[in-house]
Image 1 (cartoon, one colour):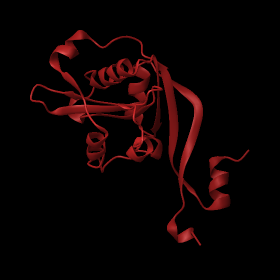
Image 2 (cartoon, one colour):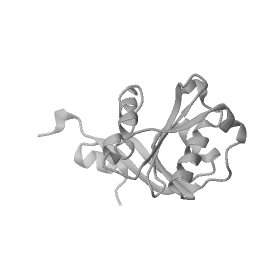
Image 3 (tube, helix red, strand yellow):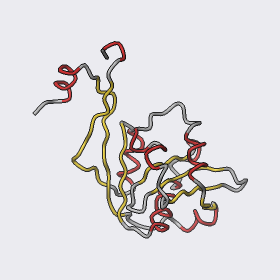
Length: 167
């Protein structure tokens, strides 16, 4: 069996990110106080895609980027909005429970909004178990663990080859 370093050396690739997979059943409903303070709205793929294009300072791997689920007709797209109708977070979830996109405004994190979005999307999709793949994002990994999701043993490497090595 080759290690990721062995693969790199043999073929000229460089490992950039490690994709980690989490899954599990959501432990409980979010507090009722969130529902009274915030509004959940269905949004469209175009809304998510337009917003995704504004996120230039973070890496989103190909399995969670918008082209991966663009053709889905059964994706749940939800936004959570504050009192002045500002979008504070969004989620995209497949009918199988795969969280394809999750984002919460950094100023509003650690308040339960991400968990509420996942829970509402799971409720919309009528599923109990959810799945997500992440690439090297410690804060999101801690969030998934706090939400009760468990890291799967499977990992993948996102690898790149410098253009100068391509013949």
